[in-house]
Amino acid sequence: MDLRLTGKAALVTGGTRGIGLAIARSLAAEGVSVTVCGRDQENLRQVCQAEALHGVVADVTVPEQLAAAVEAATDHSGRLDLLVANAGGSVGGSLLDSSYQDWEHTYRLNVLHAAHAVRCATPHLEKRGGSVVIVSSITGWKPGPSSSYASTKAAEIHLAATLAQELGRRGIRVNALSPGSTLFPGGGWESFGERFPDRLAAFAEQDFPAGRLVDIQQVADVACFLLSDRASGITGANICVDGGQIQPSAGRFW
Image (tube, rainbow, N blue to C red; front, side):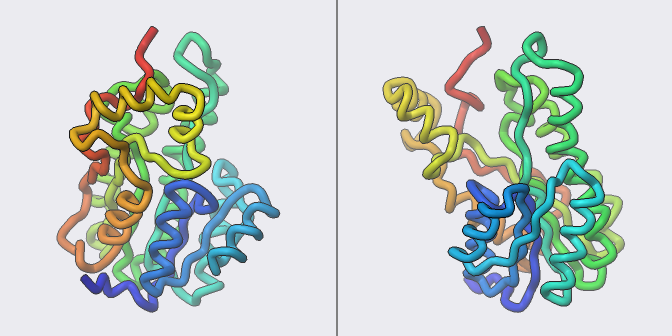
């Protein structure tokens, strides 16, 4: 299927590794001019050189740097049609093993970064009938071991639905994409499997109908479709790509 993405321009936050890089790479393969942002200048340089992407150094938890990244992406391509708010993560552990500051940083990294990125991009996106994907997680509705991270992912899902209503008359679509446990080189699940191969094998067998974790390319393919005009009838949705996963983690509450 031709996604009709050729000639468009995109910004992917947190696009130097994992799901963000897979989405950036896939968009570029579809003919999109892709800018990615990351905090580590040398890593960003190496990734962009290897993948033929444009890079901007930015810490997405710093509003001024995130706004500058949006403008740099627009200046580089002369337009901005697509935004992927992918950067995310968490600081601290469970409720009793984390501080107020840990929670605050986790919300900045996930929810506030996504909201501010959309805010900054809106003047550019509305010129083109733009599309936004906020990368959330199945942890947003299937409780996982980290309450701070899980609550931010739930907030991102609702943020996408609400922004779709707020920005729809401006011609902007907004959707959430919620991957399940995704296996990729250098990722957390690969590391988990190296340390606990039996636990990972049992997790895949018991929690996934096909007996295997989601592949990173499967997530990227859905992101590209959601961003494309082929998905013009989809907005305010949360699209789950988890391979039918039952539990959000191989860990449990202890």
